[in-house]
Structures are given as structure tokens and as C-alpha cells.
Length: 155
Image (cartoon, rainbow, N blue to C red; front, side, top):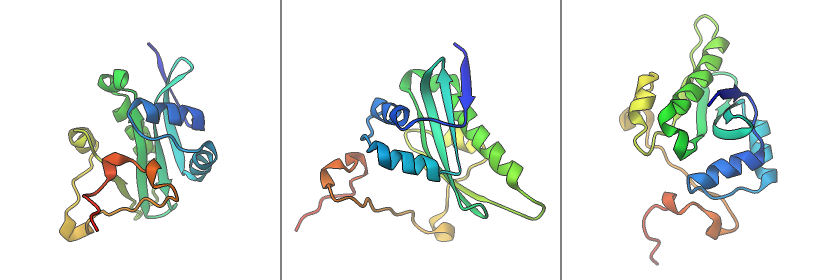
């Protein structure tokens, strides 16, 4: 196995990775817009097969979010997620000028906390950074990720 890292990935490949970990599929046009609007994408390939990825959402200044950090389950134990994240952080560090700082956020789930801590991430204290919240805007409720459903909507 020879893993190669690239700075691009197709919408079809992203949807294949998402499906492999149980995430919903996203319309290709919407995915392409998201990929084009990303500050950077890092993907891992085993031959011609995409086996991992992450996207960087960055305002070009002070705030960044690394999202869609996905690695195929059969590649999880091979350090790909760590390498993808390290490449993202190296890119951001290269953008720093003297006196500059970038707040980088990531969502740790499924036992990834130790991996991210090893890269320098710290848990966010709600008292200092507020409570992370989200909303999924859609006109088709049936396509939202069930795993993010927050409680019962009883009327």
C-alpha cells in the first residue's frame, strides 16, 4: 500500500467516503460548490481510490474550521487521519505572519479526542467559547442526518 496525498477530491469520491461511514449523500452540485468554497482540501489515495479526506473552511484571517475529516474504516488504524490533519495544520502555519494567530476548530467524535489532542487541539471550555450549536437547513427533513437529531420533537 502506497498512500498519496492530494489537494483535491471529486464530489463523487466525497459521497463514496460519506456512504462508507453512514453519512447521507449530498447532491453533487452542492458538494462541488462546497469543495470550490473550501480554503483547502486534503485527500488520501490508495492508488486511484480516495480513502480519506478533510476540508478547510477559513476566512483567510483569524478563524478556521477543519471539517469532513473522513477515513474509510479499513484505513483507520494506518494514521491517515493524523497525516491529513497535520497537512491542514502545516498549511495554516505557513500562512502565519509575525504576531498573527488563527483559531482552528475541529469536531472530535467517535473517540478521536486523543488523536486531536496529540496534534495540539484542546477541548473548548463552554465558559470561554460558548456552547457549539447547529441547525440543518433543508426543505426535505427526511435527508437530515439522524445521528444529529437532538431529542424528541413532541408537540
